[in-house]
Length: 340
Image 1 (cartoon, rainbow, N blue to C red):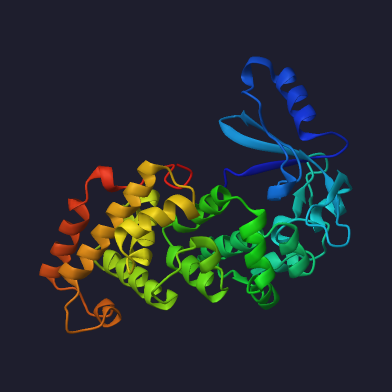
Image 2: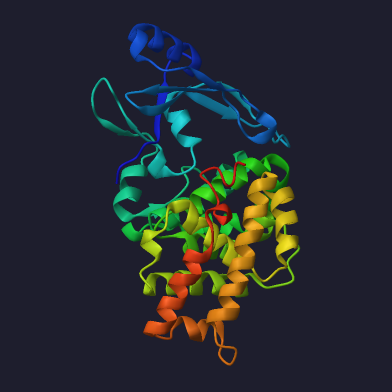
């Protein structure tokens, strides 16, 4: 699996200082330096530098240690050792370091390599402690499970139970910006596989209310059924793989939300995920299209789930393809459909 997500952990320096020296040394071949400032109130505890090298984006940050005082949501952050830095990360498999000097993979938690082999998504420390540090890690765990489901990865039972706690839901509401939640949701839904699995895990981990804030009149299970049916039928009609990632994500989200009125959805997406007006309108258009799909293609005398198990005949397959093609480009979410 190729990755474009490259992080460099720097010992004895800040990421910004190291990046400035790096760009000075590579000269004209280097890219522009970007700096993401720390924001402890939103669980962004350390400044991160970003540069483009060799056509890839590279994030640089210093090794750090977090210490929480009793009753505080915001840690005292200081330079730390590689072991301290490893223990405060989201998952053990993401706590593996490649030492550029020795060219060895270092497992400072003592669990990362074993969990990688066992295909287990586990936090380096007690999951409640890890999620209280940055509750967005609950959504990251859901995303990684969905993205890696084809390789047999699954969340460890203790992590699942920790995600279900009221403390995590409350912390997502108070500590994490809606924009960061929206970006994480976007990443969950973009894959060729895993979008429905991610939505399902949000429901089973009792995180859907915290993410969407819809005040729903419909059960999350009913919403999942709509998303499952749509993906199933688009795969059966050999349309799914032809869609761009953002289009897949947009259609799944629309089908998942389409038990509510489209205009209600637009208002909810604007406030709960901080979508731009344009992106919110696109979500509304997609919800309307999803409702039309159900009205046109799902027989009134059978359940939606029963229809999903029904073999597509030639006429229904053609109708489904026509429905997908009839949705104009203006109704698709663009590459920044969540960030707006």
